[in-house]
Amino acid sequence: MDGALLPPAAFVAEVEERAGELVRAADVLHLNGADYQGAGEGVQTAYVPGGMFLYLTVVRHQCIYVLQVTAWPS
Image (cartoon, rainbow, N blue to C red):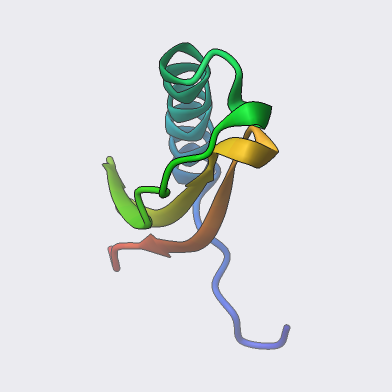
């Protein structure tokens, strides 16, 4: 990607850490996620130092999908 700016490694680490926290929280909230029948929460926003990301919790898949990552301009 010519001219594309890569986010700083520290920002990527913050996103990974927060996503991991979200996975653990969803695991506790939905102990048997594969059998979940309710409606999902929809796309949500998580803020981390240096930016934000959009994610979707899919309980029946037992995972969180990170949809978009945005680093604030420095």
